[in-house]
Image (cartoon, rainbow, N blue to C red; front, top):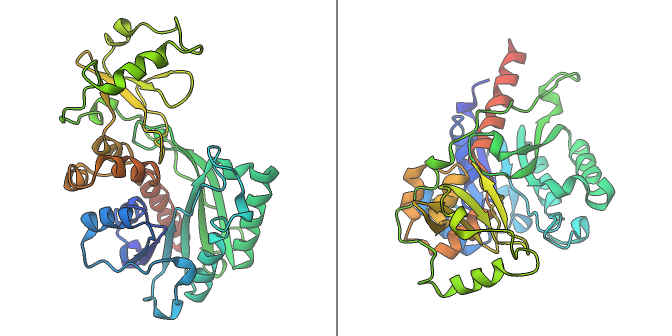
Length: 329
């Protein structure tokens, strides 16, 4: 199976993490679809101003799309997420799966990789997942799915997501099986928390007083000693919940909002930066440097919180094409 001869389109593209994962397997991107203008701006910084954005996938005229073989899509997760209202298939964003299926059918796609939040597995007592699997099956695809954690695929970020791999039924035997990639060695967090910008978080910052009040709320009072915390380099501190949470050797799930992750380096608190967040999602340093200080920090933090993990997509695609190649022999 020569993946380098395959073309794909990047739907619900965000800032292109899925694209990088497929390109690392030799596939060629022929266009993308993204409606968030800030995300599109970052995407173009990464891949070039000439890239064609086909816009809202629910309004795309598929006759105007180029020919391609595969789709990658991190379809909207707000409706299934534990931090959203969990409206699921009743929300118009939950209906985007039908727009993706229409494109699959109209373009007779061979393969797809889709990603969503872990909350999809039990939303509406599992009915939303059943509906999605049923619709993909009716569209003519063998579908395999599994929840994977990004921390097991080469980045020190805990990020559980459900991944779907689809293969058109006429391309493989009825008993075809796909197994998701095995876990990889853990990454060293010291290679990711490396930003050199002045992001120390101390008494000079207005928000530091709020942080001290937070440490003295009813959930945290008497639980933490700042002096002891500051003795432990690369200790990660999550202030996004009512109770402070501490992590060693890994970072909690990046989110689109509430960017309250701190860490200790050289005996000082530092804010997690947009540059570091990109690295934690598997973006290579050379790309992260392109947008660092060009795209506003608040936008980078939001965009990385909404992105797929490059390494996970890369590993899934590699396993898919290795499996298909074995079946061809």
